[in-house]
Image (cartoon, rainbow, N blue to C red; front, side):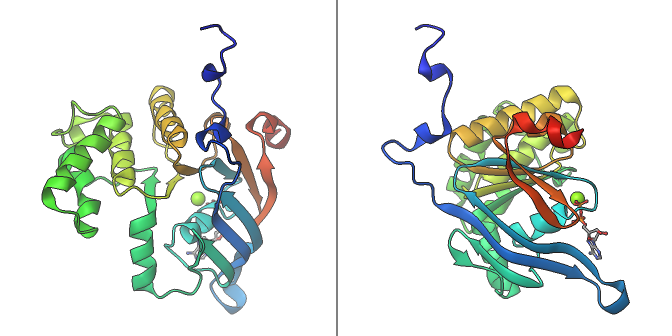
Length: 257
Ligand SMILES: Nc1ncnc2c1ncn2[C@@H]1O[C@H](COP(=O)(O)OP(=O)(O)O)[C@@H](O)[C@H]1O
Ligand SMILES: [Mg+2]
């Protein structure tokens, strides 16, 4: 094999042979979110239009207060827009009642947060098993799938450790295993490396890369250009609006500076 071998530079489109068609997984149409009422009104999202295709690896960036977490909550079915339409995997979820929204969330989306949100009294394995209990997976399958997910994030030898027996980077990897164990169509991460040092940030970014290579749609909110540089597309927010919907990570310096 030579250094020019194409296999050394995998192309995203090579995952789906003989077709360039990628279904749209997130479609936002004139999404507005207003918090409060009357004189306390804040327009956190201002008529957002945005689409993300299945299998993309995007980061969402922008100054503090620009609406990133508000957008994340809506994309993650944790909150509803004040107006506009949101289609998740072709289903209009903008007006669904709480119970249906929760069901769709549990089935389709895996979440990773800055502070890991692991249950401290449970082992890594038990933490990863938890979402499968809600999803009514059988006990033996739960265990097999949890072990497999922990292997996938490189923690096959730490499954019986509790969070306080793991480093920050390892805890975040448990959280990623928990997020992917129900085979979500979408992995959403809000500042996933915000509590990590640069070494463990790299570990987490390697896992996102491998999930992306395996075809999972990955959407990461971050204020760190270094994190965004690992993604394939940067979406830039300002004052509740998308000011750049498809920046190449290489073009980031033109926005940051
Ligand atoms: N629950 C809330 N109630 C009122 N205002 C809010 C609430 N959440 C966010 N905001 C406001 O909405 C705007 C966007 O916030 P947010 O989405 O958290 O931005 P970011 O994540 O980019 O820092 C900010 O002005 C913020 O103060
Ligand atoms: Mg935020």
